[in-house]
Length: 324
Image (cartoon, rainbow, N blue to C red; front, side):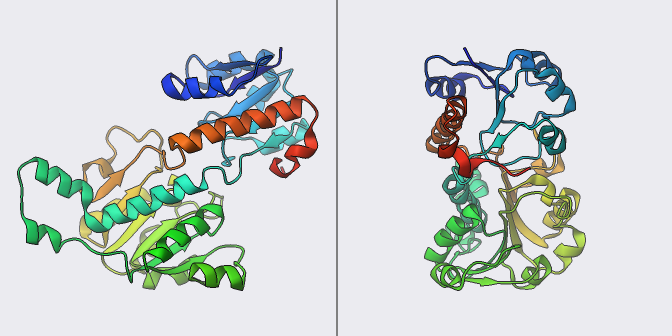
């Protein structure tokens, strides 16, 4: 019976969802503890990896996985994969491109609106008995007419832009690949040649790009200085795109009015992370792409890919293979 090893640890409802989409004739195993040491122990008899979380699929893991035939990501991020070592062994990697795009886009817009409307702080104040209707109301802003600067315009970016356009936002974006004239017109988006070109006009800055060696801490003190006072920053992409020390200082000074962060430089966040102390920061635990609907579809799609590979039905999944 082929063994599928989930390379992190699921419990409760997520684990039950994953088990429910595995067909008869296949064994699925999740880690007892989400540690690198436990992963190395469990890979010995695994035919397939279902990769989630942040444990490294590195040389040590691959050397121990003598039976490994294929690696399947639950999503699209690949920073946990040692691509050179995987390629050297000729092990194919498959991804679930675009499957969580709508969930991430909705979460992004939710964070934008919560920052504009000060929802967490206002809700907390009402629960404490603070009822300052006019004073509170005029501290909120509308999305209509605001300029949203978007870094990245892939699947997630395009869906996010479509939602923002419906609110009447002005949208500028940068990406390695410019969208077609037809797409730009349909989404109401305007191209800018570089990240720096986005900054001066932005009321809201959002991230929708992968993390690379070239864009770590792309939002840093120098970049923040080029932005308007009172800008809003929302990140549902990768935490290391932002210099969090610089962001913290900008949030304290008021240079940045508010931030909505689903991804973080360290995950889980450190217990003493200073961002946790600020009322103008909304924090979520890297869940933008994990709605119930998306998670179920993600797990089902990943397992379907593994089963297709196991049955040598490669034509049906050829568009999901990752070029290493």
